[in-house]
Length: 574
Image 1: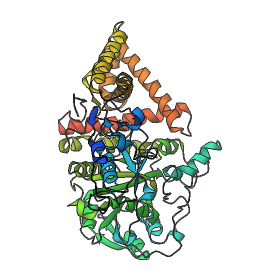
Image 2 (image 1 turned 135 degrees about the vertical axis):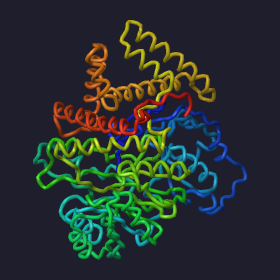
Image 3 (image 1 turned 90 degrees about the horizontal axis):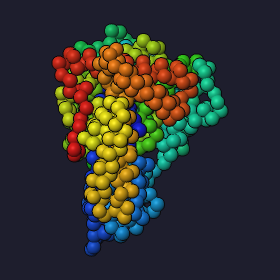
Image 4 (image 1 turned 180 degrees about the vertical axis):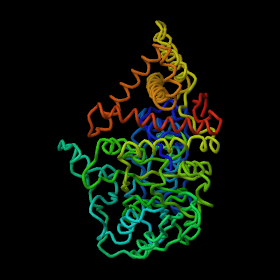
């Protein structure tokens, strides 16, 4: 798997960082203006309120969607700014009146059509508690493993008999409250606990846990040619799991595909063996399949604390893990705020997967699968109301080696998705602003302001339906510029660091730019993540993270004899 962390970006820019784990994918997309499409649907005369929930092909009636946190509501609710890519969606007055605050309840065909448009645009997300539950008996678990009998035993215990699961955090699902998954961690921070002996965070217990006993799930353990398969067989036998032994080691993707071919249920859960997961996570994720367009859903992945607490690398990963995509639900696709999900834990509709993962890929196979599904018009959802726990690497050597390994997935992804892999996506105007600011001349700031002013004027001319076109255009331009600067910082510190390091030997201006980027990055991320780590060690971890991942990207590019994974994407429209 190749993680790609979502990075807070701003909507009007189009920044991607699409193949980068810890550059957190910036929001992407050019401004799109949609005049009354959704509004017209919602206000369509003569709509038949008796149409059943499946006739419109979307969520069932009674479901609720909510505008996501990045969406700004303007003009008394008639203009919505946000989505992936960013756009301005105009609603008729009749359509705007259907909302209750930031929520829209599906009660008839017009509201169903409007809700589906908002979901597809990435402007709204389903309210998980409003979706009907699924049947966990329709899920088969597939666990690829190679020589990890202890971790496998821990996972099987949690999935098969939660009451006898090992001590420590379990996967949790608190419907309607994604932030509750971090309740233990937030309480710890509030109390000021820190250090290697800090108490381990425990998530809130699942409020939807049923008292009635569960039927044991079908679990297929795929042994990917372990050196000593006896441990795998013994662990599986103790918990009633099936074992499928492969003669040759083909990697996690091939192992998952082998297990997928044995699945006869409508849904499959792919679970890595170094995870602690509870069936309640599947309970929550299943609800998303009430939308027939959803092909795959992923939970939030948090770090599994050790018995003796976390060291400094562990605390950095706890706050800045490549696998933790944040506490807000999202649609997942190329150039979106969340552009990938990890194969650490995935729940998928079997019919949508086809042959499954690209078996020849040993890294980046999860990103590839998500993007292929999105290219087919299917939806992939990230749902942090469900949580699983991953055993992070916490020794510096193994941690950096893993980061570098993730970076080597850049070229294989560039071969399969050449238009989606750029480390930065900029509009021409924002690329020009970044360039003149990096020049650090006396004229740099005035020229940057002039380019920005022209951009505001041009955007305002496209926002004729807005009540305050200049104000909205100024906000979009400012957000776009901020996101572009964040991407430029990532290029200097992460993706291009080998070339930048050489350049710093000869250019004082480049040295100043790198220093400013470093200080700004550390200050912003240390404050944003609220990490239980002093700024000095946090700064060291940030740069080691960048050095390792960037080295992996360059190794991948050199092996593939292609710079596609290193070149920014500058385009007028997206």
